[in-house]
Image 1 (cartoon, rainbow, N blue to C red):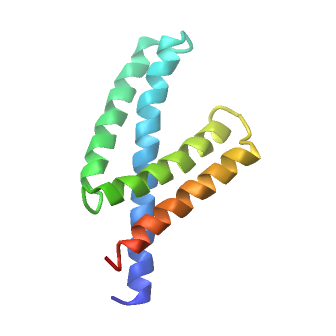
Image 2: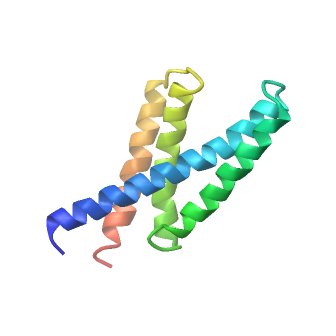
Length: 117
């Protein structure tokens, strides 16, 4: 496989993981708004649709394996901290950034290490 095709595939997978994480976060965030009396029960409808999208997006992932979900977990952590900053208005601490870096580095070791296995 050519290097360009490999990078394109990696970018596509990264994008899929990011969209999946956003769907999961939104599906959990909207009911939390309702439960904390910061929104109406109507928020449950888009929350349910978002969780349905999340489940559907999971079916598009490269494979249902521990390695894939370990990598998704790191992308989820990074996306959740982005959500914290952009939606909740909380600036991540240096420890948050370091944690995301460690999670992404760990998932890279898992994903890239499996290429040789």
